[in-house]
Length: 364
Image 1 (cartoon, rainbow, N blue to C red):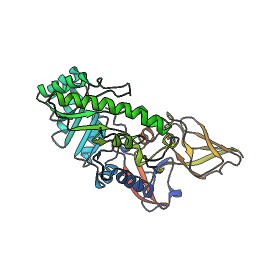
Image 2: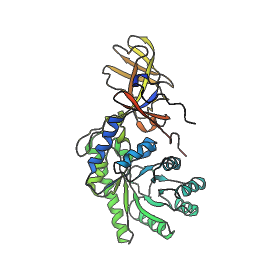
Image 3: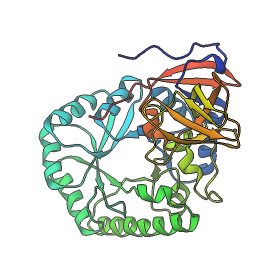
Image 4: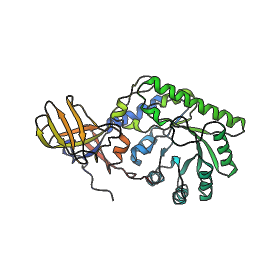
């Protein structure tokens, strides 16, 4: 059950309850336009990753600016997107198990659905489910996670898809680790190697008489390198719409545009034990720390130093006063968003809208 929203439309930001997940609509909208403009005229489609936003309202605004649909990682996320009015969803992940695949088959009767495979066993399960979906072979391009090796193993699996009378729709080639390599040179080199793996596989598919309609992949930290390589037809950035403290530590320069921080956690000082220490009500349950602690927004001299479940320590030469509200920049936007039921959408200091995060906790 979705809980009561921490704010009401028309309220001032400082009147909102806390902790609250705040979306600066002006910065968010500029980020959407920045991505669109960066690839305008290039032969690629945009398929934003909804594992970040978990919200059909976000997806609708991305599609309004030209995105072809969204991708996500879980069947339950895909269900939330389709139920929210999104008609084209790629589950950019492997789906195994009769129950999940039955749900996927049902979803494919309502929308265009894609799925990835990386094994003959997974393909057999998909075939048995009767799901009418687009099927992508995921190739391993350096992530060391899912995927078959590029080249012949990928071609063999594509051939098996066709032999099973399923729809081979192309390749999934995503290098997630590359997104947070700090220098442009490092990211460019890693994506160049991934592009070579994609080209090798595409060439072998062509020699085998197998059409490869789409190569999909890429993320917010590298997408222009995939675009410039010419090996990808579709890009999947997600964090670009919001950004976080970890992405801010990357080097940003052409050809990659710089996106703005649009996502924040609003928190209240609930205790001030000393002139140099304030304790806020946003702890581990309010902001993910897997990519580092959150930062303080536009408060030089203050640092969020550590956290427990419901408490955060903010330290500096002069700590903020009791009851003062602060904006935190999450270390990692995706798992932070998953902690909340609502986006409190703010424009110029006032609440303009409340968007439910309908795929929150959708991990099955």
